[in-house]
Image 1 (cartoon, rainbow, N blue to C red):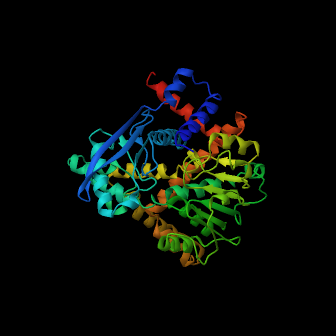
Image 2: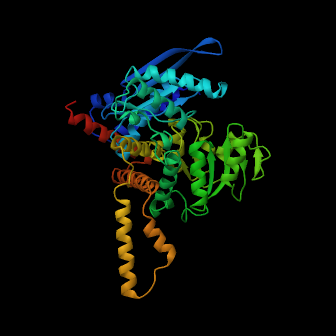
Image 3: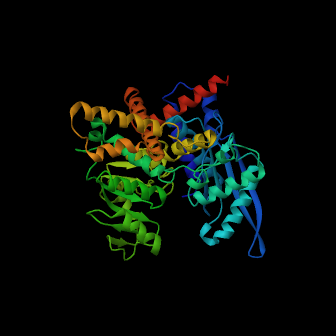
Length: 467
């Protein structure tokens, strides 16, 4: 399936949702269309010759600035893919109510074909091309990690920005997803997977929702299959297994799947895969070479956490999960979405489910602009107040508070606790508002309800500037 289908699917989902709004056709067209896409061809001298690379940076919407969205390194990337991802970022930011427009970038490269030093040189050249076009700027366009990139690439990009603008006091805010020691935020690397966990938890707090999907009880013990074991799939599986008591019965990667009906040890599986590059001979379960067939395995929850278009017309009729949670961007095509809805399979869409990354990116951006870590001013004051309260309680009751509770009170709140708290609040509030819109407007699915909310918020933003 070509990348163009990804953009087509995204636009068809837009068209379906806009019918539930009162947005005029002209404004709907303005919201739907991508503002601009820059194609950048640049040369880098590596291995004693000049190699030419192609990259893109798409700005879908600037109804809020800066525009926000990751940069991926992928040899299969295309302009259509980048524009589809930028559109999803616009809708995602609107749903969780962060003041960003939508953007996305890609570099057509397989980073595994190059050494670390070569990737750094290529990244810095790409960053230079983007910076001089104001496509990296703390007030205009703020990238983040995506497929094939991580904290190290973001650190190189931030360093290039500071070289170009050495007097910009807010230079660190030009990119998010940086290492914590370079202005990044603790909890950013886990954020998207953590957000997936939080939204699944929220789903299971609503009896009407989980019973409608065919579930009889809560989250504990549910059998989960995860497709994609990168940063997002790993963290989602780890947290759901360790903190919520779920069984991760299958982990699918491009070169094979690891299955265990009693549940895979996610941490052990990750360590093995990082060392061996495959699940073959992994002691934690059975290895199967054809991983794609396991999308249709019997399970309670399916979490596609890898790439777009993995569930399409060819396999949608065979999906057996009761709940599909889109941890990846666009893993379900428009046609497959229609099939799953007719089969009464509940889908928590990507523009809600994987919004944890941009939520915590927002926190990091704000922190870089504030130049002070969250909780710095109040932590010791709060600890003093709790100590006074504990002393008063012990004096009045004549009993000692158990040490474990006392330690928790006096330790206070760390920055990671505040980040997770803020993420939990944003994700859960988004789900609550979307499910309410679904019920009140008799909308058949969560995705359409989520798009409706996003489009109406964007429309209000445009209306406020007289468009």
